[in-house]
Image (cartoon, rainbow, N blue to C red; front, side):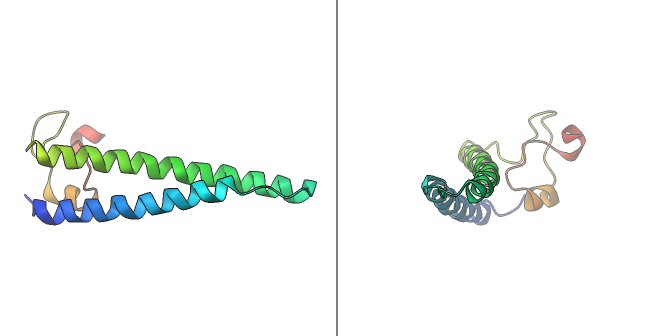
Length: 105
């Protein structure tokens, strides 16, 4: 099992980084659009991309919160599908993984 304190520290740092990014996206989305029709269309397309990035950030934040809860409840690293231990290499690659590779397929 990997060092849980290190994982917890890394997860919290990543969550803070994502929070800053999501806040910046929110700020950017609140900016008024240009009155020029062509520029407005381009800005609207950019907003769609930003909304996708924001959604992905929020999903990852929720996954991190769930992982931190599993650490707190001593269930971190246990596959939600089969109940076996999730391999350390998978947890290092995806620290908020909820299933082993076999169950993830």
